[in-house]
Length: 349
Ligand SMILES: Nc1ncnc2c1ncn2[C@@H]1O[C@H](COP(=O)(O)OP(=O)(O)OP(=O)(O)O)[C@@H](O)[C@H]1O
Ligand SMILES: [Mg+2]
Image (cartoon, rainbow, N blue to C red; front, side, top):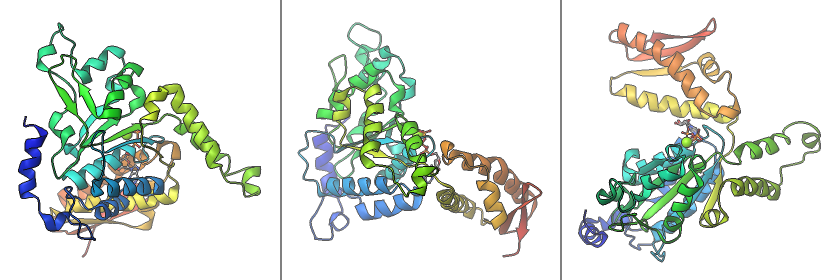
């Protein structure tokens, strides 16, 4: 594994300066274009305007590259209920910035639910089995990134890990360093975007917001108070995390529940991705209005977009596959809902 300085020196030679130049002609070592990244993010993650704004701010600051270099490039916590796009946001960013979602280092924190699992991140202490091998769930190269690309680390579902495991990350969030227990290796997170996701506080926040959708508050046109929302969220986060931990986060972004209107836009995104995959076989599928309502039917905001994905997988894909396997020479399929189920038929192009 080369030192970061060697990587910097070798990448500096190959960097394409035209691509790295900003609109002002200044050259940044980072090759990604913040505006383009945000466009892609907006087209893939629907709704969530607060997140789009926060990520745009962060990407511009990172691209400008005037940070001190003695802490991670950014430390974000995404909070929100299940299936609202928290993990998917980081996957999309990894695709845009690093070229593929699997180029980021994702740590599933629910696998680290007990305090002794801290060793899974920091390596086994001296004298214990594996201490010399520096075994850690961290993928060192993905963390350090390169001269022209930041590393991306995702601590997914952080509230499910033990408090001890979260404490082991304090130094990472603060000074961007993690010394493995054996003392033979130090990981550097200073060229890294750190994201964490959590459901903590989301339920209380959504319950508070829902009170304003019906009842006397809605009759009098009352809106949820931002101050009250902040205190609900902070209260919930403080119950789960130490104050030192919360204090090291640059920005806490709250993801909204997904309403039915947002869901039909998400269905359009899912269909365009499906059609991209089908295009490899020279085939396309179109939903009529009845099929669209059939797939969205039964949406419960508490479960986010996962219900929609399940319905696509359970109802649309099998029918489409059947038509795909039997209708020869057909380029276009139409899905519609009949008698409570989805029917896919060949459509003349
Ligand atoms: N706002 C959104 N826009 C587009 N697609 C979305 C959105 N929210 C969720 N999805 C879809 O739903 C799937 C689940 O989303 P994701 O994995 O990001 O959920 P999550 O917020 O991380 O939930 P959990 O807390 O349960 O992990 C994604 O693969 C994505 O396709
Ligand atoms: Mg998730």
